[in-house]
Length: 160
Length: 417
Image (cartoon, rainbow over all chains, first blue to last red):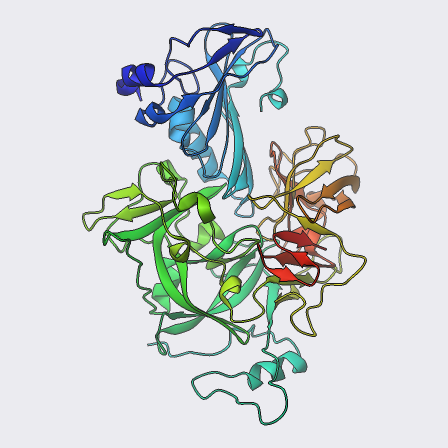
C-alpha cells in the first residue's frame, strides 16, 4: 500500500490515454478507490499497463492487466480522485486493495446482508460507496464507485 | 463412531422404483453380482429437496439440497450421510463445513503439496469466501462412487493455518452453516475441477490454492489437476458426463412449503437419463462456464449460466424497483406484478443454439411466510452476469454437461433445457 508506492511507480509501466490523446507514462502509482488514500501494493510490481482509449471528457481510465489475469480499471475525475474501480478475472480480487479505506464500509454492509442465496451476485450500497460484484470462479466481475464523486452526467452503468 | 455406510438417500423417499433400485445396489462390501443376463444398471438417482435448510440455516428459500454419503478416504467406518448439502450447478466440487464433519466424527486427511505443506484453498462465493484444507473423501451418491476425491473443508483451521489476509478479511468469511444456509455445497457444474489449467502452471500462482507450513504461513501456489477440488460426478466409474436436475412446477404463485425433485447422474448413459433429440436447447459455455444471455432485447449478450446455487433470477435492470423493506430487501419488487420479461440465451462454441426464454417477476411481498420455494423471484441488481437461478428450475429438467464429456451428439461444457 502506501509504503510500496515508490516501488510501484518504478515498476508499473502504465499506459495512459485521456480525451482520446495518448499521454506519456502516468507519473502516479495505481491508486485504490478514493485516490490518495492508498495505492496498490507490491503485487503491482509485476503488473503491466494496457492503454485503452475513451472519448469521455468527464474522466480518465487507466487499465492494469496483472499476471493473475485480473484486469483492473480505475476511473479518475477531473480532480484526480479515483471515483470508481472495476475488475474482471478468474479469481476474486483483493478488495482491500481496490477499495482502500472504503473496504471496511463494504465489509460491514456485506456482513449485515442476510442473503445466503446470492452466491453469484451482490450489490452493496454502503455509506459513500456502492459495490456491484458478480460471477463465479473462473470469471468474476465487479464495479465499486463513490456516488458523490461521479462526474456530472456520468452514470455507473457506463463504467465497466 | 458413526458407522453409517449407506446410500445417501432422502428420508422422504423417491418411490418404490428408486427405493428398490437403491436396495439392489447396497454396498457394504458384499456387492451384488448379477445372477444372470446383463448387469443391472447402476442406481443413478438421488432426491432433491427444497426446504428451510439445516438447523441453524435461519430459514433458507429456494435452496435445493441433497444428502451425500461421505467417508474419510479408504475408511469403511468414518462415514456419514450429510444432509442439506446445497446442490450447485454453478460451481464444481464438494465442500463441507468443518463443524458438520466434526459432528459426524469424520476427519478428512488434508492433502500435502510437493513441499510437504498442507494444501488449503480460499474459494470465493461473491457474498463471501471460504477457507480450508483440501482433503480426500470417498463419496457415494445413489449407486455411484467417487473415491479419493479432493474436497474442501470449509472453515477449517485445524491445520493451524488461518486464512491469508486477502481471504475473507473483516467479516466476509463464510464460516458456519448459518452463513451458508447449508451443511456444504455439492458443485456439479460444467467442469471436472474448480480451477482447471489456470491453477496448474501460472507464472504467478492465482490466489486460490495455498501451501501452508506447519507454522501457519500460507503462500499461493500452483496445483496439479489431480489435487484440485473436483466435481465428484466426473470421477464416477460411469454416468460421469453430467447430471440432470429436475424439479416440478410449484403449486402456488405465492410459495410452496417444500418441493421434491431428482438429481440424475449421467446424460444418455442409461434408460432414465436420455437427452431428447429435439425440443431441447443445448447451450455450450466458454472456458469460464458461461453462455451468453441477451436480456430485454439487448444487441449483445452478457455471461449467463443456469445456477441452482442462486435463489432467484439474478440480473441487472435498473428500471425495476428494488424492495426497500420487508423480508426481501434487495430483491426486485416490480411496481406492477407479475412483470413479464424475456431474454435470449445463446451457446458458445460447437453448441451455439439460441433460445428465447419468457419469464416473469412476482412481488415477493405477496409471498407467504414459512414457504421455502418461490417461483418468479428476481434480484441481482448491478450484476454483469445473468444468473438463471432456482426459479428457472421449477417445471424443467436442466442438463449440465461436463467439459469434454460426450453425451450422444453433444459434448460438454454445456447447459441444456
